[in-house]
Image (cartoon, rainbow, N blue to C red; front, side, top):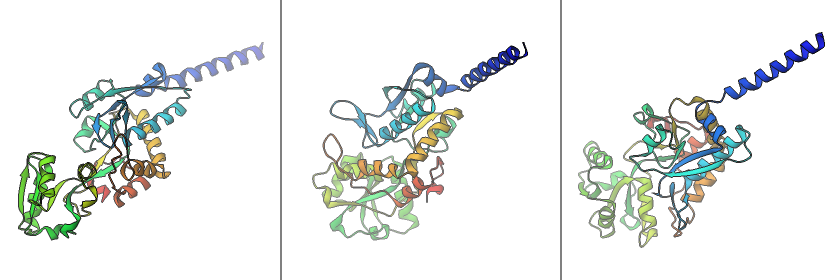
Length: 303
């Protein structure tokens, strides 16, 4: 009788432990486990982070990172397979769709800043952008100081033009600042020598060079008009268990060296569908970030 009682207690304990283990899953992890699916938010034209190929399939640097996270989730949740659903998002819809549960991860080029962290969370930084300038190699411009007395263009209404105006004053450049209506007009001004440089986010400048008639004619400065601004994969705020898994997956990816290999794939090699090449080697700041992953929104942490 004592044996059967002990056996009964053991079975109850085992069942209770199993139930408790199941109850440990909450939020996004529980939903993924219960439904056997996860939904990724993607951008349709955020090259090379997240965009559509010729078959209208979302591809890109951020998409590759998200698929690595999915591999980690399958392992963590002990799932043989995990259905991946894809949902397009825009700059205006990405945060609301994440908050209301339509998407579970936003795989794109979203800046991680303190204001956004009031609404969402980010995993470890996968890219650092900054306000730099594009110029012709033949111009001889090597630094911001070389822009003294020159005509410089930037996009009207952008933070970049504000940074340029401030630098013009504080560094006594005496430059003539031209405000273009869009990227195309600004690039044309450099192309036709009406301006020696175009100030904008460096990754956008790289895209303009890649799609230009003569990409080898242009170069992006190493000098910057701003501090580094981190891009991160977005996830829902206050979901600690899910963030723990995602953070661990991205940290392992970046510190293993595979993160840089993925970076090189999308930023230094020809990419589909048109064989564009951004010719943008990984920066020293991003190398440091990959070595010691961080989800900090503070630009000073990446200098």
